[in-house]
Amino acid sequence: MFQQLVVPIDGSAASWDAVPTAARLASSVDGKVEVVTVVDRLGDVVKSERELAEGIERLGKLIVEPTYSVLAGDEIAPTLANYVEARPGMTILMSSHGHGRSAAVLGSIVDSVLRRMFGPIIVVGPHVDEGAGSPEGSYVVAVDGSESSEAIVPIAQAWAIEFGAMPWLVEVIEPSQPVDIDVFESAYAARLASRIVEDTGHEVSYDVLHDAHPARALVDYAERLPASLIFMCTHGRTGLARLRLGSVAAETVRHATCPVVLYRPPELQD
Image (cartoon, rainbow, N blue to C red; front, side, top):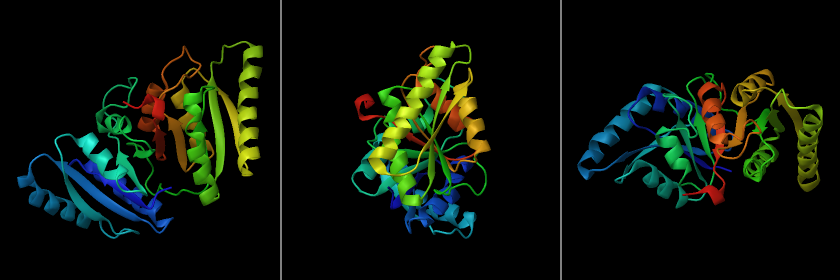
């Protein structure tokens, strides 16, 4: 769980879009928000501090008033990761601009940070609704039958218990698969849900979607619930030509109307 959300700012308007979402999330735990930027020259610190202060002022009144810090480092991702890992209770919430094609990674700084973090980060994509940022309600938790994808489940379940939310385990399978495979995949989701209920005593639901485009299916499902958060790991198998889940995560972030909580399992860390 988070007590302080750290929002990296790169000078773009899109990076500032994540701050109001962070403020709403932080308010739910009586937490704090800190906007940070990374500079590679000490001579830029004063100027960057001024720019952060002005950026916060432009946002107007927020439910949680952010503080700001300038971090010095040669590389953005390791500097951010080191800063957060050294301070228990901090979690990164950052904007993804949504540029470029959906490859097997998210691209930009988001993927670089994920590769160095040992905890989840919260990503605000370009289509997140204004007013999003509640940890209550329903969660979409993407699983695909692999142990890697299931690494996100304990994180989603902990948040669900804390905030009284309903997690939905959702897997997407190929619509052309034969019936016996379909039954097997449905049984997987049911067993996983049953195991979670037995371990935690917290209610959990599940669903199986049939779509050749898993990211589109997850986003549409989250909108129909509606979900306040989507949880997913960035690597695994999807059951669709064994694509890496990184590509699904990238596409989900790009189109989701709610924040996406991403996690890279420890065995996949750089």
